[in-house]
Length: 523
Image (cartoon, one colour):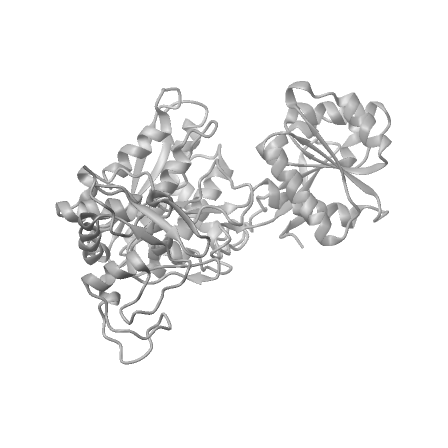
């Protein structure tokens, strides 16, 4: 029979925290950790939100989502969640605490009271954003047992003499060679750091996490295995091909930092996963620069812009970014024309946009449809400025009709690096010394900038590094110079370091892409 609930705290996340993940926790601490991380105890747990007047399963409102791993708390949505490390909770204060409250130290009973009834040790009500939980007395005791140990729990992948950094790599398939180059470059980078004494007397150890790109399990199984063994502190420069397979979501649910994933840019650099740090932003933010470029280039500012976009995740993200920027800069409303890639008609698209008086086209779709459109437009003698993200159309515009080349442009988040910079010299030196190869320079540049970011985050986190300290340290970086990318800036709501794009044109003689407008952030 299920005992009657008496209140309690919760946590969410679908984690596998048994076995090796439990380190040296007692049985009560292991159960308490599951409550903190997943919101699941031995019996049912419920959460009541006073502000909204809503009652829901405890697994929907995790302790960890607000107070984070280790209990340090965070500022989110204008609300600062409390530092609930046991040392902080039980510390004596002569006056007002950092939280702005004045009350006696917590003990076991007052922690339970805060969890159940939302009151501090002085009997004052906690913020209404703090849920009030229902759980059994047994689960409450387990939770308190874990809270007492939480901030002293060993950090996965961190030992006295090393920090282990994972990288997802395909053993087979089209990206295997790129993976070998990236692995070689990062191994060399880590070797150089270690030759200087490492970071706080810890060596950086690269841990390749290999998977069969053609196998049935692939990246998710490889990531799950390495994380279940608590063998890495974070991931760097993951190469995960193919459609969304659950890998990114699984790692995010485990709250494991990921630096510079190479093949999964965010749709926008803002409001994305707290634990993943991208070097460049996605299509949405590039679309904003595309709008700025057209606004400056159009001879008639009132010219209508047509937005031709695929009805899929990338196309819709690009269209949304463009529309938002047009409203921001005060450009006249656009003509929006979505299309299904399977049913795309270049003739119909050209007819519709011309009839609407469109003077320039922003395109967000695949390469095949892009080339069909520009060929149809050229055949009809219509050559408006046509701007598309390089990540979506690839090299298609290099095959555009000769007369259309002067109207074809690409947006790319990758700025041309300064070949004379010290870090560029270091990049080339590493490649030569460690015989990295030269077939995948873009992947290498991204991985190198990710390594610079990783090193800076670890330096700022100090010897007592945790995943949360590391995430917070990177999440407050301003204009970090990597030498191979634009300066990287992050904040609690921004998880792409370089939010912007450069514009390329096509040289009519060589049919190679050439810079037209330098890299910049949106207005």
